[in-house]
Image 1 (cartoon, rainbow, N blue to C red):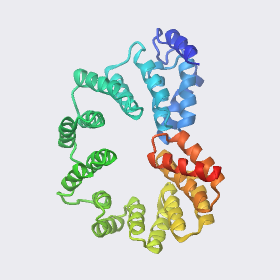
Image 2 (spheres, helix red, strand yellow; image 1 turned 90 degrees about the vertical axis):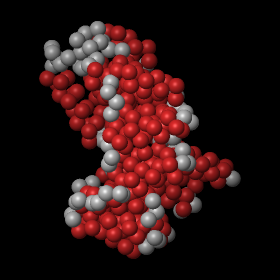
Image 3 (cartoon, rainbow, N blue to C red; image 1 turned 135 degrees about the horizontal axis):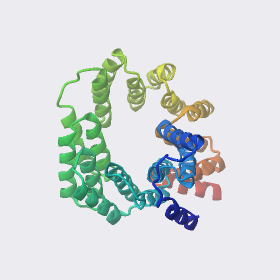
Image 4 (cartoon, helix red, strand yellow; image 1 turned 60 degrees about the vertical axis):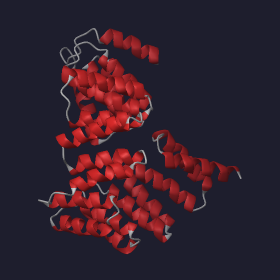
Length: 350
């Protein structure tokens, strides 16, 4: 397969790689791939982009799209190959090259190929003006390579360029992954130094307080966000109630979210968590099933993990092991799931 793909690349990348001379059907297939990628239909998008490559449709862009789809599917090695193929095409515009290099560096990080990730970051720094996302990516790589002072410098510049709640949370999450929560918490504190101007700000502030385990302030901010019409705050407030072991109010929030949100998957996942806490495992599986049918990639991982947990709670270790193996194929970097898989293997074997 790899040799065929390489031969195909050599054939099609020597062409202009544009939509000129392509059939309407081929053009529509490429555009459908873009739509499916945006909608979170990653496996479908991947297949469509691979077809576009075969048809010689915008080859660099199609390889890039396939790479992004593979990243979303957790196929990081395949994604790296796609991004490399894209970069090897002729007539790769500067903006597209920047995008591809950024994605490839992030994929290298996932495979712990830190030197390769650093090389891509250096290429970005040399060829482009640094912005918040590039500073953040460089900080991620530096931290992974234990270059703590360098990472801190990059993160400071990232937050200086984009002093938002989202950037603060992103930096916090990276430090948390490295068991350096205190270093990340100061960005959360910095984000809270301003004042909320609208419902979204209240929601974001509630999220920050939630990460800081300050549930009283989180609840206050999220209630103001809900009063302002912010639906997302309902799911977050449900999670706050779960942390406070108040499953009744949590369930109420998740049910409101399901009834009002455009995509209720997050709410169904929350209801499943309530069911697990209350010991109603059949109801949990029902809610997980409802969530999976509507989930995008962001919510799917949590739903599938909780499905595995429910089967374990039901003492159905064989099914739990099957679910764990399927989960690890999709999300190989999940350290908690790896431990769970090892535990389930011992139970099934015994």
